[in-house]
Length: 413
Image 1 (spheres, rainbow, N blue to C red):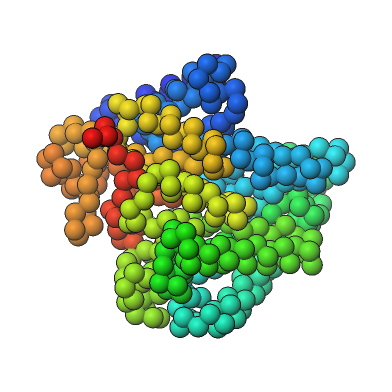
Image 2: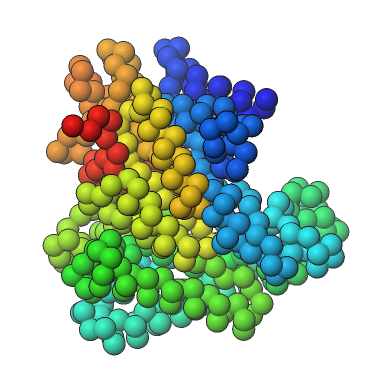
């Protein structure tokens, strides 16, 4: 009943200053796909149909596959677990409370993230494979030291710095003045090794995309495995739960791209854009079928246990809910966490509802009346995991403009 009402409210949207219902950026909604809601005729399938309608119109909810998550998130007792992410994509590692011998997720936390720019590692190696792995380890050591600094600073904190978190039950129930040190070890909290630009890294080193099901993909999986091996090594030595995390780089994508151009110049297919590709994602400009994309990215998502999310770009599917349901079914069977990106914007000048476009100068405009005033345009796009509605920097705007549609809305001819 509560789920149904939340979905109905989000489908309706939120009124803007003109009284028009638009897509709100928050709160983010998650919908867990389970045996009792994924099959036609199942008890709660009506809620999944409602969720599909909501996704088609408002880009949420995002979908967690209980089936896949139970296979991936296995605790020390050998049991699979299903639980929500923190924020847009950050997942805690499985943890069993030593006092109760039961899994615990709510109330735990993450200590922070440091991100490695994989593109920089590749370009610094000048395509020398041996040198690549050497530089990779040097940069990972630098990330490790940065994470240790963050951890050590937190370890000096007491519960008094934030009583609502540490004393009153949000994260713990410690006494006044008590150290939070013990909560930073042995799996209660996690700390994240982030990464960005896997596509560009692989493209430079192999000449292929990691979508090639060959040399590029093999190298990409090796890079991801190496990140996990390092986290495992650090965890064993320090009893701190290091975990690999696909950093969202909402605005940092532009910063990274500018730094790469300054250091290495413009390299076709690698540094010739004002953004780098998020985490393990298929680059936004690469033509690929929605189901092929999700299937491929599932292999890389499995190697990003600290957090990751996949998506597909679609046109407005409000009139094609069966297509949305087909994607949802595929998510349930193939990938732990994914979402659909659609477009339904609003122009205050002429009342147009549809997709607000981006011109060659990366300026937003209404295709109906030509309005370019940001204050009179309501635009909602998936920045990375969260929905953004305040416009974006040059790099992210170019990335949004170059996104190809992975699922069309046409009948087969």
